[in-house]
Image (cartoon, rainbow, N blue to C red; front, side, top):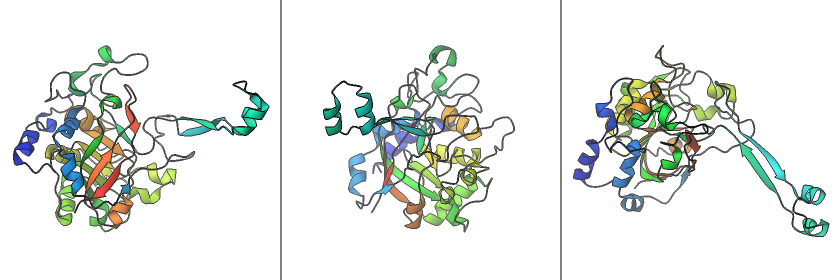
Length: 322
C-alpha cells in the first residue's frame, strides 16, 4: 500500500484500539479536536501507487435502493421510500411555474423525492452513531454537541473520500458454505484462519470486508435480517488492533445477532465507533469478489456529506490488485 516500513510503523503507533479502555469512549491519538478517528490514515496512503497496481476491472459493492428493500426495522426507523414530486402530465394540470399549457407539453418535466433512515442500503456509520454513557469518540459529550436536529461533531460530513487497500475476508467460503448459519459468530480465530487460507493479511489503513454470504438472501427481508451471522467483539478487536480503518460486511448490522453481551445490544458497534475509532460499513455486495477470489483490491468510496449525520449511503467500488 505505502511501500514504506517507516510509514507503517508510524501508523501502527496511532492505532486507537491498542490503548482502548473497556466501555469507555477513547481519546484520539490525533488530538482533542479529531473527528475522523482511524480515517486519518487516509492521509498516509499513497493512493497513486495503489491505483497503478490495479487491473482496471471494477466491482460495484453497493446495493440499489427500492421500495420494499431490506432495511433496519427493529427500532421502527423509516424504510426507503420514493415518490414523484413532478410528472409531465401533472405539470400540465398544475402549471406550478405558470409557463402555460404549450410549454408544459413541450418540456416533459419529471422530479422525485426520497425519504429513508440514513442506515439504509450500503452505508457507513459515523462516530456519533454509538457511544457510552452519553459520550462518543474522542470524549465529545451529548450535552455539549447534540442539538435539536443533529450532532455538531463526528458526522459523515467529516469523512474524507476513501482510496485504500481493501481485503475480502471470505469466512463463508472457508467454512464450506454459501451462507453462514444464523447466529454464527466470527471471532479472532475465524478471521485468522480465513486470512491464512487466503494468503492475505490486514495492514494499517486497510478496509476489511467480511463475507458471511448473507447477500445470497437479498432481497428477502425476513431471511436477510433475522438472527444474522457476523463478527463478535473478539473479531472486531483483532481487526482493529491490526490497524483496519474501516470494517464492513455483507449483512445488515456487521455484528452477530443477537448480541453475545447481555448488557449491550450492539457490542461491536459501540466498541468500534467509541473505543477503536473505526468506521463501520454495512450491506456491501461481496458475491462477485468472492466468486472471482479477489482478496486484495483498491477500495474507493465516498459517502454523502450529511452534516452531523450518524450514517450515510456510500457507493464503494473495488479494483483488483496485480
